[in-house]
Length: 341
Image (cartoon, rainbow, N blue to C red; front, side, top):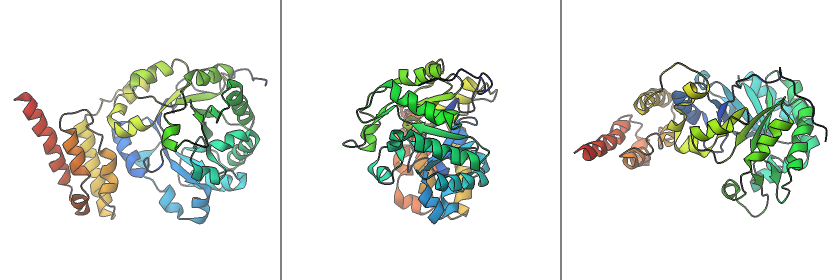
């Protein structure tokens, strides 16, 4: 296929998506994003995937409500009908999201039954139609998150042609999970671990489509790795590491966005989370819905196991008493005192 020449004005030198946290089902809800915002002000955040059916036939507020403090945040949609996606993209814009992202990477059987997710990579023109419909409906960016191949299709030309077709529909931002999606025989978890990572495919996409913004995703765990990838692409998306170890994001603002604010300590983040939890309790939120995202805040620190155990205790959480944080923190102090003695 013909690759268009670069357009230097299309992409800023430092993308707002320079570092982002992946959309993760059952994990990146508004409480998770609020915790991440206490760690980093600039990292781009994504919602869990929301299907068009859930928005068109369900409780819109339950799926789309978020707090201004979470911004910038993108709404990820799952669907394959251009008209439905356009309506949902419009809803997302009306609710204040900064970006609409189309999921073309999820390999789960449930998603496949809905004829969207990774199986859409087999129908690039349909994806292009979906992108065009959404772009016509909204003024905010419409982006695509995808894999590098499907099943046994492993040639670079497959993902190159996919990106080229979608780019012709006006999409300028692509988030590349640098693994194949195996639609039959592997679970979603196995699909994140077994297909080999091919970062070079994402690098080649950036070379072939210099005018596009290309972010890379898959198996990235440290800021040192982020820095290395940014030599080749515009952005890096962290996945489960950012969830299980949220403090990995603490140095992002100064290191990758040039912010002059001090790196927050874990204790400062915890204090902010307690304030957030207090407000949520006043609204009737179950405390465990907040604390479950903070289990990894002290990952690697002495006493972290006790912290996790206390904040996972359903009986204590049901009381809605914020002194549970004092009890959890005591395990950290005791562990440090034991080491020092």
